Amino acid sequence: MDRGPFTPSLRVMSTLPRWGIVRVLHRQSVAEHSFYVALYADGIADLLGWTNESRRVHLLRSALWHDVDEIVTGDIPGPVKRAIPQRDTFETYVITEMRKHFVSYPRAREEEKPVLVAANLLDECAYLLGETRGGNMHVVHALSLSKRRLRAIWRQLDLPIVYIDEFLEAHATMDTPLPGDEE
Image (cartoon, rainbow, N blue to C red; front, side, top):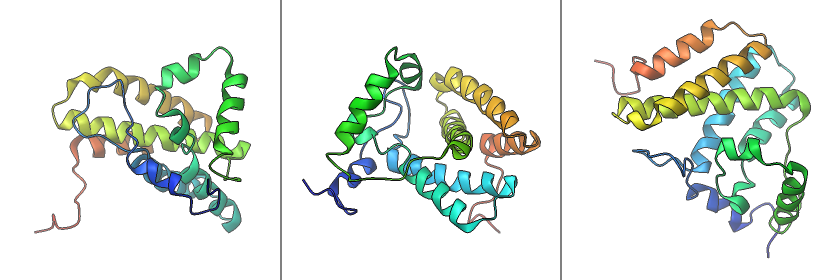
């Protein structure tokens, strides 16, 4: 199997669905999610004042690759991931399987992990708010939990909560003009 930087295994992320146990209107792929996590992580880095270019590049690479292990596991629901009793054994298994696909790939540094968690939760909330705007009330509970977890990690990052409030409001109403919406 090709384990180089252009392995076809990466393309699986574009067809690998997220939210497997939640009824959704729009099926989000792991690749789409990773793209938004990278964008949001970059924005959080701005808010944190991270100006070192090499640090920013590593953060963005880590964000793009943060769920690549799902080509082996599929999208495991968050509550299941958090409840796995032998997490070390599971992670060893995933790493072993990933080495069959990739020689190496960027892993988040300790200081990047809370940023990636926050960026991940921003995407979760934006996605779930989009679902509710489309009339999907099946996601309301998941959205409530994601908002709570987002606020907790945001406080850990010591960033003003007003950014979260504005983000959630904008995505709840989509009152932010999109290209082509101008009159």
